[in-house]
Length: 270
Ligand code: NAD
Image (tube, rainbow, N blue to C red; front, side, top):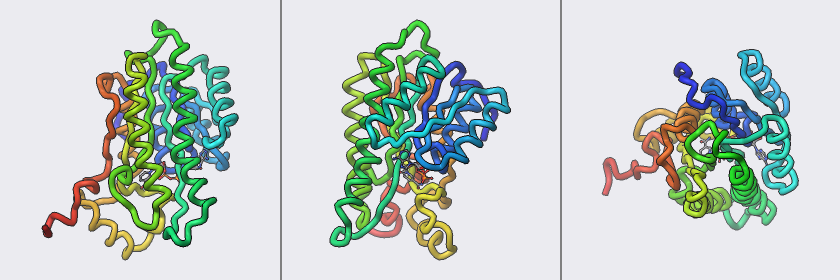
């Protein structure tokens, strides 16, 4: 991680699904830039608590809050507890996501619904609470030029079709239009809404795609830049998007994918 420049000083940043992978890295990066952290987790309490301890030890501010982003009452409580703890919220990184892969003929309705509920409805519930809170907070006390910022964690599969993962790709395609429509709706309130679309990032969600040499070689054929992404690659993008450096950026998707979305098969075909 590069040296802190305190770009998120006095910001309160809420990151969902922050007990592992990309969410954990985003939370660490935002804390190192001066943000007070709300570390949301669903079931992995231990790593969330350890992250909070690391931040407190370093002189920062952080709290871990359990909530399932697909449950309305959980999300409302998550924001209530955030305001009770820190008095405001300035950045929401709606990162929580899951995969439940199957070919369509084998996909259960439950696996379809669960992925849509976490990956898409979860975005709606978190963004709705964020907008409600941002609208009631005083602009005078805001640490940023904007009235608040929302970052949705999308995927290259918001544009790249993905056989065998139609629940996931449908949810991420929905996140793309959700992000743009919401950005259009709340820009006049001074609220910025952007998506990050990671490519292949080394985390538990896609372990089988990188844990063997054979799988990694196959994966690298899809990545023109020639390496798998690290959670920190996404974290640096999230810090920038959340900071005033990106104040004129809203309604866009920032692809952090080593070129995965550039149709790499066309390098030597077509
Ligand atoms: P991960 O499995 O390490 O992280 C997902 C996190 O979300 C976990 O901490 C999990 O506990 C949490 N979570 C799951 N369901 C939840 C719920 N209902 N409520 C609250 N939290 C919940 O995987 P990751 O790769 O870090 O994924 C983070 C996000 O990035 C996801 O939205 C994923 O779709 C997206 N993404 C990842 C990749 C990649 O290559 N790793 C690529 C594109 C997009």
